[in-house]
Length: 83
Image 1 (cartoon, helix red, strand yellow):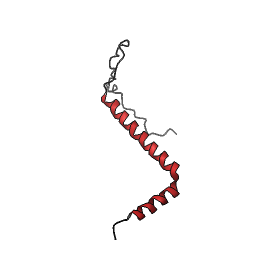
Image 2 (cartoon, helix red, strand yellow; image 1 turned 135 degrees about the horizontal axis):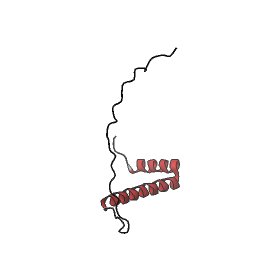
Image 3 (cartoon, rainbow, N blue to C red; image 1 turned 120 degrees about the vertical axis):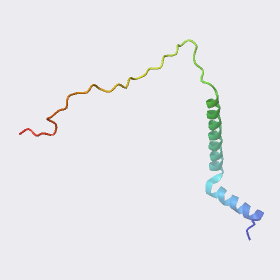
Image 4 (cartoon, rainbow, N blue to C red; image 1 turned 45 degrees about the vertical axis):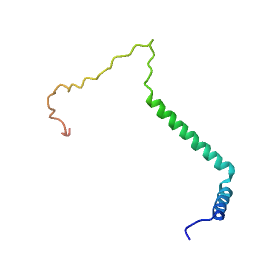
């Protein structure tokens, strides 16, 4: 009961071809192949070290000083209403 004969597979393939058409399936397979190629190319690019041009000098790393602001006198008029 669980096994499928060759006729079952022929009917399934025929229905799939009728629903999607031959052109859509081949386009889908082409898109999948392009995606795989792009993924492999991206993985290969990650493995290569970044080439730096010799004519441009490297810039030193710039840092931002995180000094706290100078303390100021407490304001007493905060929250008061002027009438």
